[in-house]
Length: 288
Picture 1: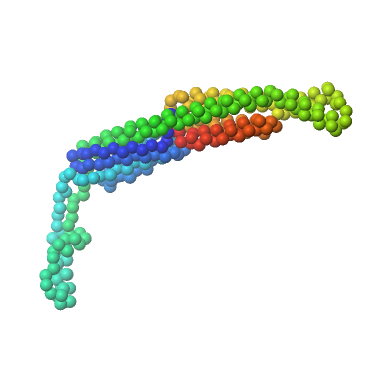
Picture 2 (picture 1 turned 90 degrees about the horizontal axis):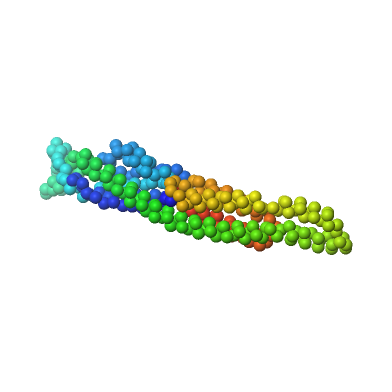
């Protein structure tokens, strides 16, 4: 079982620079990728997206690559024509204002376009090092998702055990429904009629009411869903959507039991089961 939330960071160095790769993810119905890349890697965006979509089935995956400390110096060129133009213009303005004195050329070097550096280019070896770092970061990130998935699995199985115990108690309580209906209906009729009601008619009415309140089918389906959920939870692969569907089906069955049963004891147990299923559904939304 794999969670959709996770975090990993990898730091490495190439022959040109040092860099860090950060991957973080949150839950999403589908796989979504968001990339924050250096400008010189924009052409690699599509390939990196394909790599991520191959490794992840669900989740919002955000990958960032930061470049630190270029180890190689980039050639610098001074635009002499532009520098001379700036110098002439500044000298003319200085003379016109009568400011006098000499000014530093350093101020002119800071002006736009005077000093030009060659654009950084990525060597093939550095590119290979970055992609190797991405693979390493993905492996590390997936391990964090699997660890969180294992913790979620344990919590889900604990909730399932609690639901199973409640279902056993609900089934036992439902066995006494007919007798309770018989006693209640007979007492009500005796009070209204001031006489003993006809047994045959009484049994017929009780049978009709008991059939309306029978929850055996719902209990059996609920047990089937619990068993299927348990099998998926301990299995491998991407099971998040299936688990979420089964949790919805469990909630539907317990809701039907709640509406059909008139027992206050069963009603209290149903509330506990609903709370446990709500917790399961919330956790399923974070399973890949």
